[in-house]
Amino acid sequence: MDFTVSPRIEEFRARIERFVEDKVLPLEADPASYDAHENIRLDLADALRGEARAEGLWCLQLKPETGGQGLGRMGMAVCYEAMNRSIFGPVVFNSAAPDDGNMMVLEMTATPAQKERWLKPIVDGRVRSAFVMTEPHPGGGSDPSMMLTTATREGDRYVVRGRKWFITGAEEAQHFILMARTSDDPRKGLSAFLFDRDQPGWKIDRRIPIMGPEEHGGHCELVFEELEIPVENRLLNEGDGLKLTQMRLGPARLTHCMRWLGLSKRCVEIARTYAAERFAFGERLSKRESIQMMLGDLAMKIEIGRLLVMKAAWELDRGGYARKEVSMAKVHVANLLHQAADVAIQINGARGYSKDTVLEWIYRYARQARLVDGADEVHKMVLHRNLEAEGDEFWTWQVAG
Image 1: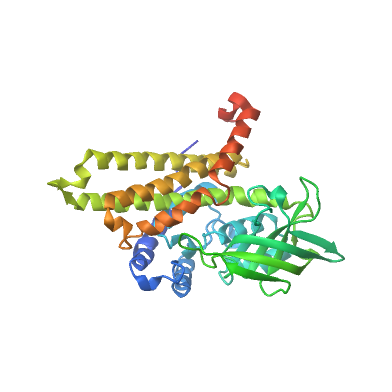
Image 2 (image 1 turned 90 degrees about the vertical axis):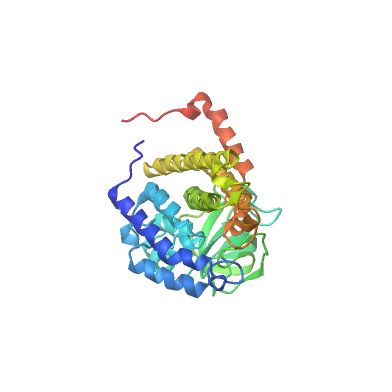
């Protein structure tokens, strides 16, 4: 691998860094910037989104013909890390979940007509979206084969019946990508559909209270009582739902890691600043070996995470699936984020536990990282499955040519 980045990517990174420093970070310190669910107020977010778009820092992950900058996964890794120096950063650049993953999968799979109807409004920032897959027990979670929500073909439309939950962003979403069962075939039994918030036949049953701060639109439980979806609003062919899920979730897991690295670095930044200023027992905290070991350990683990993310991004950019690379990055970076917040709070003491910094926000947010888009244990199981299948080939270097 060549670990240099192009001057164009570095230019975007530097511009994002300045934008976050000058326009986004100052909002974090003002309690009036937050909504009732501890995210940036939507009116403030929308104003900043307008500025980011005017500066050409918008939808960098998409192709130019879709409205983006075509940076590729490696360029995204560099820029997403810079965006999430602030807890408010990604949404400002239209690079936050779930819109981020939804736009990328629609760009890959939607027909031209579907892109115009369903993708363009998200790219333009006029609507938000949600990905509707996870179900309550005994339905599908990490194992999509357990999915119980059905979409039954009736002439020129499908009728959807079932229940979903922990659907991120549902309360603010206008456009939805829905996964439902269309047959009992173990590999081709799922299909993907598009529907609009204003269609009858479904409802949000509740917004589920959670431990940490929430994405805009929360995490909701949805009930489908007889939602009718025209055949033309199916994505790909009937039975291609699992294929679409794999196309979406792999890159989406990796973009989570890119953003989490930015938050991990922010934790270290806050800890280092405080340790350099705070005196205890006659010397600065930063001079104490115990503090130096804490921060040195985090610096190393952040760099390991960056290497894992960049390796997976490189594999995706060269046309591979990067399944095991993404799983390794997901497990490592999710645990790193939790550790980085915990160590930074420890170094800051009571200040870190208070709301005087964003550390406690990041700490509560970080706990979900080991669950979303596949729990640690699922990814480790996948890695073991690869190890069993590949043996020593698990660690093979790719040979040029």
